[in-house]
Length: 102
Image (cartoon, rainbow, N blue to C red; front, side, top):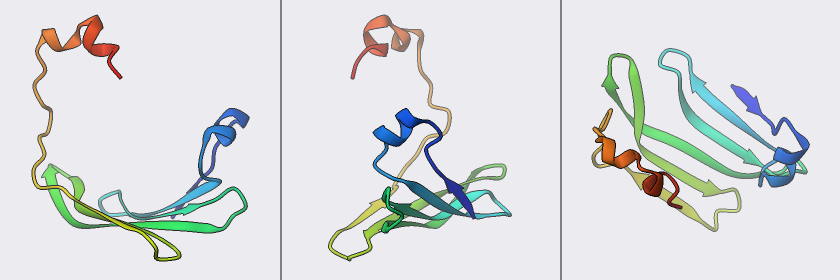
């Protein structure tokens, strides 16, 4: 379990959360659950990861993620159907115009 809090006044002001707690599997170093707390310390939502796949030698990622508010009013499910490791980018990708797009 790792607790994360904003480290500067600016980060505290800009962050929507007072802290996050990550539940990490020690064997593969993947966050399986994240708890999000407001600035008063109240739990707001919980994200859980599942359907882990090994992408390459010892690198695991979740193909399914569910985030639910504590009050149960909203739930978001994200399912990864396809992913590419180390996508190829040609030199034309790294133009000033591409790098400054929002």
